[in-house]
Length: 200
Image (cartoon, rainbow, N blue to C red; front, side, top):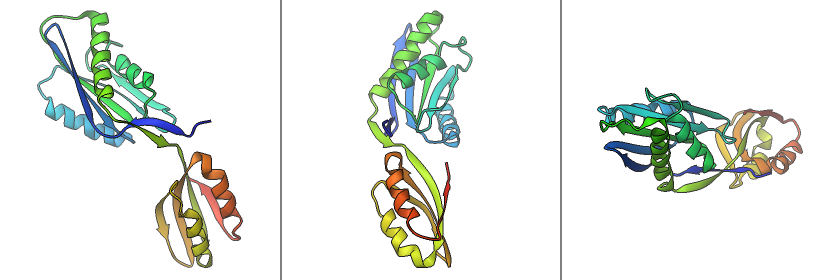
């Protein structure tokens, strides 16, 4: 089973016009909901005169968290097609906002679905798609005398150390690529007087 997923490296944009309505799409890499709230505030400030700020996002290494928002458009005509494009490109940790300036002619639900879909696709096609690793987070507690041995194990390009407390009893918080966790944790367990806690 793969321990990788796809995301985008940085903000990207697209635009689509239909019957004088303008749809501006902005895709952001995000990792938590607080970031999403901040991005939405920025967009609403930048496009304060727009009629609608519709969005969808997909979060998590297994894309388990998602949300759609139609912002006054007919139900299912904006957020769902935005999410559909994120999903069809198999992306996660991504927020797409589509800003609509109404041009005076109603597009109908099929027309709206098409417009939001195409605008989203443009922003995502303009993005740099990157591969990220699914990671598992651990907390370990160990004696100071074992510090050097532990640090040798954790000196690995697929391990990220998030926090380290060095004292008589040391604590280390780290994440490891999912496919490598078995080998790494086996080496750590071979050190006596160590406690391991999964921190996901």
